[in-house]
Length: 151
Ligand code: HEM
Image (cartoon, rainbow, N blue to C red):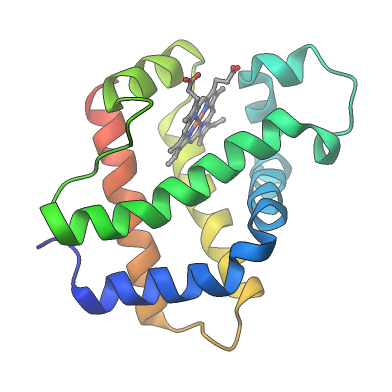
Protein backbone atom coordinates (compact mmCIF):
# COMPACT_ATOMS: atom_id res chain seq x y z
CA UNK A 1 0.00 0.00 0.00
CA UNK A 2 1.31 3.43 -0.87
CA UNK A 3 -0.62 5.01 2.02
CA UNK A 4 -0.98 3.42 5.43
CA UNK A 5 -4.22 3.28 7.41
CA UNK A 6 -2.63 5.72 9.86
CA UNK A 7 -1.80 8.20 7.08
CA UNK A 8 -5.32 7.93 5.69
CA UNK A 9 -6.72 8.60 9.19
CA UNK A 10 -4.47 11.65 9.60
CA UNK A 11 -5.71 13.11 6.30
CA UNK A 12 -9.38 12.29 6.91
CA UNK A 13 -9.42 13.47 10.55
CA UNK A 14 -7.76 16.77 9.71
CA UNK A 15 -10.12 17.19 6.73
CA UNK A 16 -13.07 16.71 9.10
CA UNK A 17 -11.71 19.56 11.23
CA UNK A 18 -11.31 21.82 8.19
CA UNK A 19 -14.30 20.87 6.05
CA UNK A 20 -16.74 23.52 7.34
CA UNK A 21 -14.35 26.23 6.13
CA UNK A 22 -12.78 24.23 3.32
CA UNK A 23 -13.73 26.68 0.49
CA UNK A 24 -12.02 29.51 2.39
CA UNK A 25 -8.89 27.44 3.01
CA UNK A 26 -8.85 26.23 -0.59
CA UNK A 27 -9.06 29.77 -1.91
CA UNK A 28 -6.30 30.76 0.49
CA UNK A 29 -3.83 28.26 -0.91
CA UNK A 30 -4.58 29.38 -4.48
CA UNK A 31 -4.10 33.03 -3.53
CA UNK A 32 -0.78 32.00 -1.98
CA UNK A 33 0.18 30.31 -5.28
CA UNK A 34 -0.63 33.54 -7.16
CA UNK A 35 1.42 35.60 -4.65
CA UNK A 36 4.44 33.40 -5.35
CA UNK A 37 3.83 33.00 -9.13
CA UNK A 38 1.50 35.85 -10.24
CA UNK A 39 1.50 34.63 -13.87
CA UNK A 40 -0.14 31.34 -12.77
CA UNK A 41 -3.49 33.18 -12.60
CA UNK A 42 -3.31 33.76 -16.37
CA UNK A 43 -3.59 29.99 -16.95
CA UNK A 44 -7.28 30.20 -15.97
CA UNK A 45 -9.58 31.32 -18.81
CA UNK A 46 -12.13 32.62 -16.29
CA UNK A 47 -9.52 34.81 -14.58
CA UNK A 48 -8.22 36.28 -17.84
CA UNK A 49 -11.76 37.38 -18.76
CA UNK A 50 -12.84 38.67 -15.35
CA UNK A 51 -12.59 41.98 -13.52
CA UNK A 52 -13.79 40.43 -10.25
CA UNK A 53 -11.35 40.41 -7.33
CA UNK A 54 -9.76 36.93 -7.09
CA UNK A 55 -11.34 36.20 -3.71
CA UNK A 56 -14.83 36.83 -5.15
CA UNK A 57 -14.38 34.53 -8.16
CA UNK A 58 -16.65 31.53 -7.63
CA UNK A 59 -14.99 29.51 -10.43
CA UNK A 60 -11.60 29.94 -8.81
CA UNK A 61 -13.06 28.84 -5.48
CA UNK A 62 -14.66 25.80 -7.16
CA UNK A 63 -11.34 24.75 -8.74
CA UNK A 64 -9.52 25.25 -5.44
CA UNK A 65 -12.14 23.16 -3.61
CA UNK A 66 -11.78 20.46 -6.27
CA UNK A 67 -8.06 20.23 -5.59
CA UNK A 68 -8.59 20.11 -1.82
CA UNK A 69 -11.33 17.43 -1.95
CA UNK A 70 -9.54 15.30 -4.56
CA UNK A 71 -6.32 15.35 -2.50
CA UNK A 72 -8.23 14.22 0.57
CA UNK A 73 -10.11 11.51 -1.35
CA UNK A 74 -6.86 10.28 -2.90
CA UNK A 75 -5.70 9.18 0.58
CA UNK A 76 -8.61 6.74 0.90
CA UNK A 77 -8.33 5.54 -2.71
CA UNK A 78 -4.60 4.94 -2.36
CA UNK A 79 -5.04 3.02 0.88
CA UNK A 80 -7.88 0.90 -0.53
CA UNK A 81 -6.61 0.22 -4.05
CA UNK A 82 -3.06 1.58 -4.26
CA UNK A 83 -4.20 3.91 -7.05
CA UNK A 84 -5.72 7.35 -7.52
CA UNK A 85 -9.19 7.41 -9.04
CA UNK A 86 -10.26 10.98 -9.73
CA UNK A 87 -13.99 10.26 -9.66
CA UNK A 88 -16.99 9.40 -11.79
CA UNK A 89 -17.35 12.75 -13.56
CA UNK A 90 -13.83 13.00 -14.92
CA UNK A 91 -10.71 10.98 -15.71
CA UNK A 92 -6.99 11.41 -15.18
CA UNK A 93 -6.60 11.64 -18.97
CA UNK A 94 -9.13 14.49 -19.15
CA UNK A 95 -7.43 16.37 -16.29
CA UNK A 96 -4.05 15.87 -17.94
CA UNK A 97 -5.36 17.21 -21.22
CA UNK A 98 -7.01 20.28 -19.59
CA UNK A 99 -3.87 21.16 -17.60
CA UNK A 100 -1.55 20.54 -20.56
CA UNK A 101 -3.63 22.77 -22.87
CA UNK A 102 -3.76 25.49 -20.18
CA UNK A 103 0.05 25.45 -19.91
CA UNK A 104 0.16 24.29 -16.29
CA UNK A 105 3.79 23.39 -15.46
CA UNK A 106 5.65 21.35 -12.82
CA UNK A 107 6.48 24.48 -10.86
CA UNK A 108 2.76 25.31 -10.48
CA UNK A 109 2.07 21.87 -9.00
CA UNK A 110 5.12 22.17 -6.70
CA UNK A 111 4.26 25.63 -5.38
CA UNK A 112 0.62 24.63 -4.95
CA UNK A 113 1.76 21.73 -2.75
CA UNK A 114 3.81 24.12 -0.62
CA UNK A 115 0.80 26.48 -0.33
CA UNK A 116 -1.59 23.61 0.49
CA UNK A 117 0.65 22.34 3.31
CA UNK A 118 1.20 25.83 4.69
CA UNK A 119 -2.56 26.44 4.71
CA UNK A 120 -3.28 23.16 6.52
CA UNK A 121 -0.60 24.02 9.10
CA UNK A 122 -2.30 27.37 9.75
CA UNK A 123 -5.81 25.85 9.72
CA UNK A 124 -5.18 23.06 12.25
CA UNK A 125 -2.02 24.03 14.18
CA UNK A 126 -3.07 21.79 17.10
CA UNK A 127 -3.05 18.73 14.78
CA UNK A 128 0.06 19.65 12.79
CA UNK A 129 3.03 17.23 12.85
CA UNK A 130 5.65 15.90 10.43
CA UNK A 131 3.46 12.82 10.04
CA UNK A 132 0.41 14.88 9.08
CA UNK A 133 2.51 16.83 6.59
CA UNK A 134 3.86 13.55 5.12
CA UNK A 135 0.36 12.07 4.84
CA UNK A 136 -1.06 15.06 2.89
CA UNK A 137 2.14 15.24 0.81
CA UNK A 138 1.86 11.59 -0.21
CA UNK A 139 -1.77 12.00 -1.26
CA UNK A 140 -1.05 15.14 -3.25
CA UNK A 141 2.08 13.69 -4.88
CA UNK A 142 0.29 10.56 -6.05
CA UNK A 143 -2.64 12.58 -7.43
CA UNK A 144 -0.30 14.92 -9.30
CA UNK A 145 1.93 12.11 -10.61
CA UNK A 146 -1.19 10.37 -11.96
CA UNK A 147 -2.16 13.58 -13.83
CA UNK A 148 1.37 14.42 -14.98
CA UNK A 149 2.00 10.88 -16.28
CA UNK A 150 -0.78 11.51 -18.82
CA UNK A 151 0.30 15.05 -19.70
C1 HEM B 1 -8.98 22.72 -14.50
C2 HEM B 1 -8.18 19.69 -10.81
C3 HEM B 1 -3.83 21.72 -10.08
C4 HEM B 1 -4.87 25.09 -13.32
C5 HEM B 1 -9.16 21.75 -13.55
C6 HEM B 1 -10.34 20.94 -13.39
C7 HEM B 1 -10.13 20.11 -12.35
C8 HEM B 1 -8.79 20.37 -11.84
C9 HEM B 1 -11.09 19.06 -11.78
C10 HEM B 1 -11.62 21.04 -14.26
C11 HEM B 1 -11.43 20.19 -15.49
C12 HEM B 1 -12.59 20.35 -16.49
O1 HEM B 1 -12.69 21.39 -17.10
O2 HEM B 1 -13.35 19.41 -16.64
C13 HEM B 1 -6.88 19.92 -10.39
C14 HEM B 1 -6.17 19.08 -9.45
C15 HEM B 1 -4.94 19.66 -9.24
C16 HEM B 1 -4.90 20.85 -10.06
C17 HEM B 1 -6.73 17.81 -8.81
C18 HEM B 1 -3.80 19.25 -8.36
C19 HEM B 1 -3.81 18.20 -7.59
C20 HEM B 1 -3.77 22.85 -10.85
C21 HEM B 1 -2.67 23.79 -10.81
C22 HEM B 1 -2.97 24.76 -11.70
C23 HEM B 1 -4.24 24.40 -12.32
C24 HEM B 1 -1.40 23.70 -9.95
C25 HEM B 1 -2.08 25.94 -11.97
C26 HEM B 1 -2.35 27.09 -12.36
C27 HEM B 1 -6.02 24.69 -13.98
C28 HEM B 1 -6.57 25.37 -15.14
C29 HEM B 1 -7.74 24.70 -15.49
C30 HEM B 1 -7.91 23.60 -14.53
C31 HEM B 1 -5.95 26.59 -15.81
C32 HEM B 1 -8.69 25.06 -16.64
C33 HEM B 1 -9.62 26.10 -16.11
C34 HEM B 1 -10.29 26.94 -17.20
O3 HEM B 1 -9.62 27.84 -17.69
O4 HEM B 1 -11.45 26.63 -17.51
N1 HEM B 1 -8.25 21.40 -12.58
N2 HEM B 1 -6.09 20.97 -10.74
N3 HEM B 1 -4.71 23.25 -11.76
N4 HEM B 1 -6.84 23.62 -13.65
FE1 HEM B 1 -6.47 22.35 -12.17
